[in-house]
Length: 451
Image 1 (cartoon, rainbow, N blue to C red):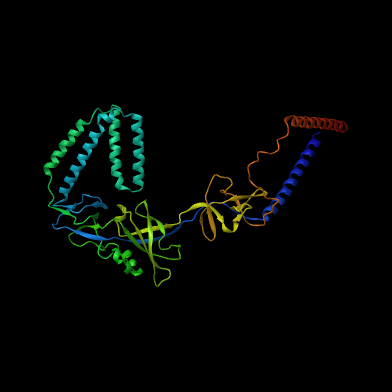
Image 2 (cartoon, rainbow, N blue to C red):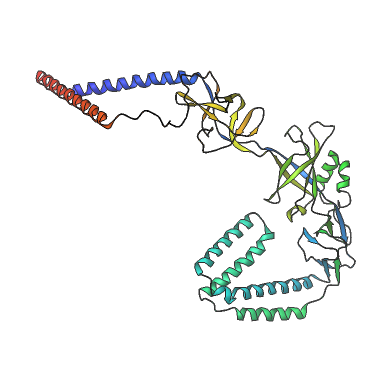
């Protein structure tokens, strides 16, 4: 009996191996008749990086008396005609006293705000705790991004929330003692306070910057026509020539600015009038700019590119030269080779894909195209090409292997009745039982012979 079972197992395994081999050979022959490319997500963005020179319409702001300067406004702040842009003090200690008084007054305001009964009586500890967690996350992100401009505002918000939380959970009843201590320190500092020896105001409206680099008179919008590759290289080599005596800063006439750089015109298909995204090394923020001009030089690998923008921020006025990256045509979709594109019987644009040993047609929705490929919109609709589809790029499409992925029609033939299926199953079970009995009888006879 054991030998008979072993023989049957070996025969079964041998048969299975033969079937797998035959199937594999057929499958390989089928696949070899087509060339396919796997559909993947792809970005079409064209990028180019270069050292850019900022160009602005700027005028130098000068002061009369000598001393230590204190600036009331952050760089890039808009100031009106006649507004103070700098104070002149005799010593740095005078500036420290002035700034310290302002800091203590801000702390006093935060404490008064935190103990406001209208806030503390309705606040829930759990809610305030969640706001504190959010502020921690915001501050961590700002520190990672080196965003000092917004960090101080978030710090004040966090301090207020923590003060409110201490009152809500009854760790503090009020901050009157702390406020009284601040008032005492402010009073002492007020007695030491010295008025500035001079107040510098502007004669025009614009955006104030507290430093100069020596290019204010030579790099303006009117000077762009005279910019050459050599001139730009000189500025990049020496981005700060220093400031002259009596200079306290400069005023930018409006928020428009331009940038000049040197690019290889063959590196990207940039054209005048293109809208591009600009990335900077100084800030994670991006801006949208327009390519205003591309000027060829004697060297075919070097052209002067001019871009213009109307977004002005603190980070964009801190330097004269900065490395930037221009991004054009930033599209993302499913990459489809152009030679794979076909039209079905309904004149719908799409591709043929392999589904095992069958072929199906899938539509495409073009969002970007070039000479080598198109990008199709990624969608959950299975009638459109999807990621990881095997797109047929070469090979004759056989109608025998083609299958249309359509919804089942309403008038399809009904499935066989349940009674017919049950009868068929009963019949097969009966036949199987008979065959099994016959086999067992044969096995017993064999056993008797061997015995």
